[in-house]
Length: 246
Image 1: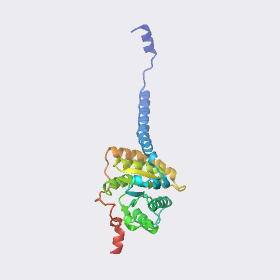
Image 2: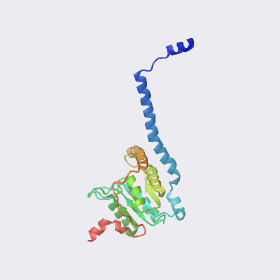
Image 3: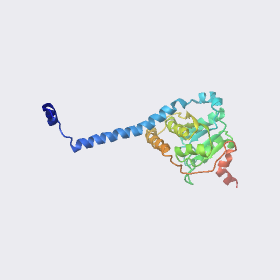
Image 4: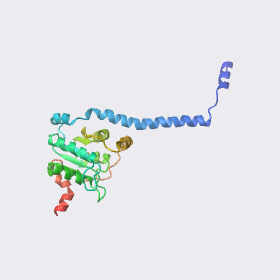
């Protein structure tokens, strides 16, 4: 070793355990940022071009030829009336239906508890607004967005859907649709300010990460069901109506 190399080696401080730990921690932070940031960026870039206004969806309805408009559930009040965020989703979907964007509606939401049924109340609201009961299909097992999209493909056998929910939620919903082989457009239902939106958007950031890797790992839905044809009457999925008539 030359004299200059000896001097350089002598002046080099050996790495301490703290230095090694800090470098390892920094690497983990970078990996975590990438692991969370990539799914969010991918979902945005993949789907931003397929988010339409109601007018555009109506103008291009014939070329897209959607099987149905799918409404993703949100909370209902104790008296069964939709919360403001759900009401806006329903009103947007009903407007699209009446404009002829698609011939059927799929209501997908949480009915995991016998005392809580989003879907029944969503269906009842749409019927009150003049939608034919035959054109409303109910997915009672849409407990999570992942399950709703999985079931849209494998239970309702949809090939093309128009999704209606808030814009922050559309990117993940459309990503899941496309991952399960459904061509999807999204129409945002945002009509005004909602309480706790910062919380919902933060939660959605992490939900995108979870579902991105859920698709990669082929996660199974919570509930399986037999297939339902969207060409028939939606009343076959409105089990509470049958119970009340029996």
